[in-house]
Length: 349
Image (tube, rainbow, N blue to C red; front, top):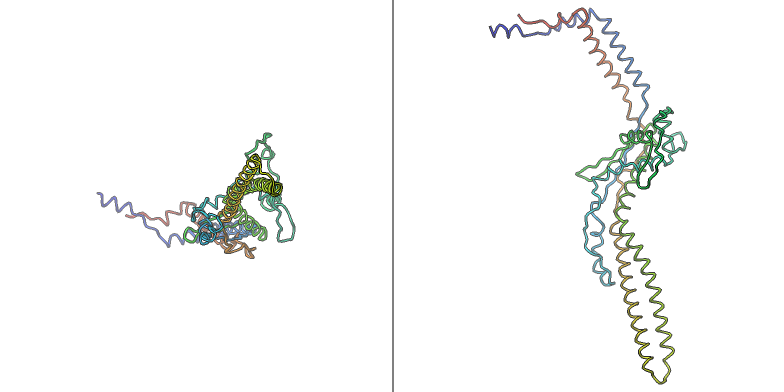
């Protein structure tokens, strides 16, 4: 009984029956297929052209201390300590792509002025409205902004947030973990603007990392510069007092005990100010070297170029896919119509 039920559950597909159904319903199959081709062609030829521009940079994985360590002996002769070398990078290169996903990046990008392939100059937010949104007026509710503008936070409206969300898919960055090369790309309707946006993104990343790496060292340098200037003024004052006192008592006169005490005080103050000034000056030179140590180096491996060929839409592929999908749909409709599937799917006996 089980063998008999298993044999009865077998269904065979008749290719001859399938061909007969297609031939019988050829006008339906042909019509639906042509309709699919027409819809696919319409979408392909009305879709906006997109151009992708790429740029590649090679970041530094370690600080510059390692490169300056060879001068440690020479610097020590001048009383300058270069410190230990090989300090780790403050921001790992694999985190660099996240910089381009931040809201401050897009807010600054909107204010940049770019030149289109037609030679027109416009701000990027205007470009987004005319080329990406195609001049469509946004809903009024998306333009509502909060009245509060507290410091330290970004307050925008719904339109800006939607634009940023869409641009995050168009401006991307990735890193090759083996080589360390970071690739930044932009996909936009204008090839020249796409290249300029990619260049801006590359500059933004390098400047952001450089500022992050050197900010503390520059603050220390500025602070030491102010202290050196103040110590220099005090040192010069004490130096002048010492010279004036020496000129006053250089003639052979009766030496007074009070004059010796005053001279010792002046010389003591002079030595203290001189030592303090020289020590600060040494620290100031070390701080200048520290800024150089912390300044990262970026190598532009491939500058962004304006692409000549579009990346989207691929019209031939879109029409071919539409034809295939239309053909499959038409065959399914032909099989369902008048229960023609009975002629194709034959149960076993």
